[in-house]
Image (cartoon, rainbow, N blue to C red; front, side, top):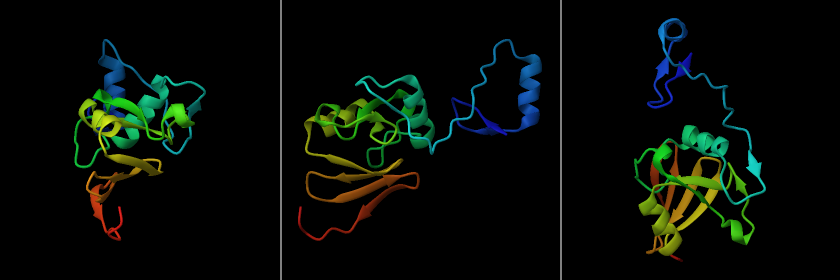
Length: 143
């Protein structure tokens, strides 16, 4: 069993065998364990982390956004300049619009666990974004 990289749709082993026998160009990549923690000691995000995030998160992780992760910026959840590492646990795909909303707006982002994010809106609402979608969380009334 495998997946098509551009659509994430599953394909059978028989289909892959057929492609291997008839394709002019075929790229086969190793399995990426989405539970692995990958980190580097640099600000720049390497392709292996970007690919990991794309496979794990699928889309921009801003609430209700559906822009595909492969066309997003890779943003540090906790800023690199403030001690945040460049890793699969501290980076997330954000489309340019939502990257700017986080960087220059009053939206706050916290990583709860790899692939699960807590957003705080400018009005104090809390939203969880994960593989199931976006969920409005109850708040205590304090912002």
